[in-house]
Image (cartoon, rainbow, N blue to C red):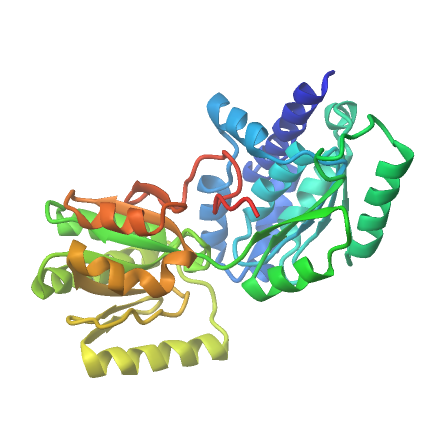
Length: 381
C-alpha cells in the first residue's frame, strides 16, 4: 500500500470506528450513551442528538479527498483535545491519521469518552494496522522529546531521507482556548510543527427576504446541538433591517428554542454559568429586551453600538444591522468567526463573509453539519 492510499485508509478506518459509536446497538455506541451524560454536560437527549446526527460518519468522496490533500505530512502527530464538543475527537483524529501513521492523543480530562472509544476500536482494527496506523492515548505530552526524536530521525535518516525543506517529522494539533494554544506552541520542541485551533464562534445572518418563523426554527436547530458550546454554534443573530424586524425574530427564536428544549433539554448548568446568564439578562433588560425559558435565553439590543457576547448556554444575542454597519460591529470578533449561517438574501451575509473569509458559510440550520474536509475551523497554523 503506497503512502497516499495508506493515509486515506487510516482516515476511513477512523470514520468506521465513529460509525460504531453512532450506532446505539453497537457495544461502543451503548457505552458512549451510558457515559457521555456524565461527562459531556449534555442531557441524554442532547447526547443522542450529538451521536445520531452530528458525528461525521458519512463524508463524500470529495470531502475525504480534500481532508487527505490538505492535511500535513509527518512521521507522528500529537493531538490535544478540548471538552466543548463531545464528538470533536473523530474529526481531530481523522486529520491526525491523515497527517501521520503514529498518532498520540491527549483527551480532555473532563470528557475523554469518544477519544477513548475511537482509540480502542482503532487499536483492534487490523486494516488500520496494515495501513501502518497506530494510535495511543497519553496523559501528558512530551513535546521536547518529540522534537528531539524528530531532529534525531532527520540526522540518522530514519526512513526516507528528507530534503532540507521537507515536511516536519512531528506535528502538534491543539484544540482548546487561545491561551492553551499559545502555551503549547511555546513549549513545542524543534522539529514540531504546531497547528492551533483556538476559540471560535458562529454567526447567524437573517436577510430581508427571510420568513422569520422559519429562520428562527433553523437558528434554534444550530443552537441546540452541544448546548451552543462549539465553535460553529451561533452566539449572535444579525437581522438585516429595522429594529422591529429584529424584535420579531427574537420573539420567534424564543418560541423555537422553547419547543426545541422540550424535545432536547439543555444539560445542567454550573453556578458560574448561571451567574453569567443572570448578568447578561440584567444588561439586556437595561438596554433592550430579554426572553428566558427553562433552558434558553434570547436577548435583543435594538440599537447596538457593540456586540455583547452571551454565555454559551443556548443564549442568543439578536441585533438589527445594515450591511454598511457590519464592519464596525463585527470588527472585535472577526478573528474568532468560524461559521456563518445565512438565509433570506440581502447584502449583510456577504458583508459578514468578506470580514471573515476563513469562516465556513452555510444555510441556516446547517451550521453544525460542516463537510468532513479538514479541521472544522479551517485554520492551518
